[in-house]
Structures are given as structure tokens and as C-alpha cells.
Image 1 (cartoon, rainbow, N blue to C red):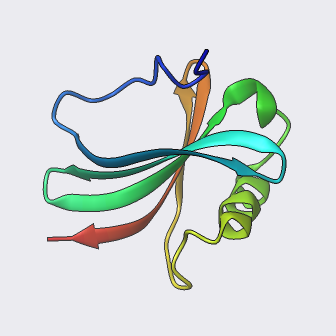
Image 2: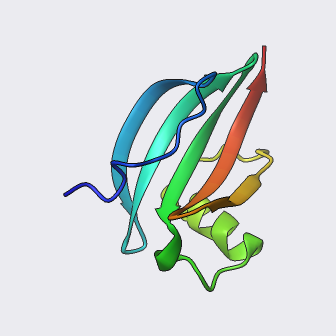
Length: 93
């Protein structure tokens, strides 16, 4: 069973790519998305797998994945129930 099968998706968000990966032994999902003229990437973890990590540690996991650009800004969302979102590589169109 896919632990990411029930990811919440904002109805106004268009998912461009969706791929399962592993980051330092943790299952994760990578999404590339567009919302309201903003494109970005999300690295999504199961909340229980990152429950004890702060923002800096989550940023470190994202960097370890090799996905964020060097100068990327990050945002974090832990209010999605079973998931923790690390967002980066923002581009404003």
C-alpha cells in the first residue's frame, strides 16, 4: 500500500510531477506543482517519520535529497495531518 495515497491536494494546485523517493532511510514523495502563478517543489514525509525534527533538520533532509537549488528558500507545513511538507525551489511567473 502506498503511504502517500491520501495526500491532500488543493483544488487550485496543478501537480506537474509526482515521484516516490527515499531520503536518509525515510520514505518521501516529491511533487512539482503550480499554484496561482507560483511553481515549486515539495518533499513530503510521513509526519510520524519526522515528528522530532525541527525546521533546520527538515531543511537538512531536503538538501540531502539533492533536490533544492543552492539559493532556495524553504517553507514548512506540519498541519496536514499525516504528512509534513518541505517546500522549495519557488519560481514566480
